[in-house]
Length: 216
Image (cartoon, rainbow, N blue to C red):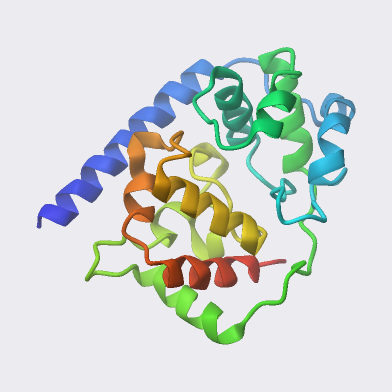
């Protein structure tokens, strides 16, 4: 009962953060046409269509506009500090509207159909079980509850929880380890940090194999 209460508190905290983020970013929506020019700065690492060829850099194709905006702003404000290169690039985004335009452009792009790293089917099968059911013994909450079926997100109105299905395996592994070690701490109400700390190294690898295979 205590674990369920903690989960509920975390979810409520996340929703409260969503309200604050939505209020802060209200106004003119992003323009994907304008964003295409702005996103040229991002293409060297993330791919000009948002499908980065290097697992060090996340795929942005199809990602929620406002999630991308939040990450840019968090890097600018120092709330996210687990990538020095991205911190420097984010500093070059001159305005909130520019961030929205970039986010709108990448959200319109189509995710590539193949992973850049081989997926181990046995590990992916274990990862799928964890994604949907969590681990009641360790208190890990099922990822599907926030990230949606196959990690494809819940809704653009709930963009505080990103689309992670189809993301690079090695990038997912790094982010989970960063949350676990507290080198990344810009998650709403500490939800991801709380979950990551309860994941074993094997579970991190397994769920990352599953998610990296969830391509179109």
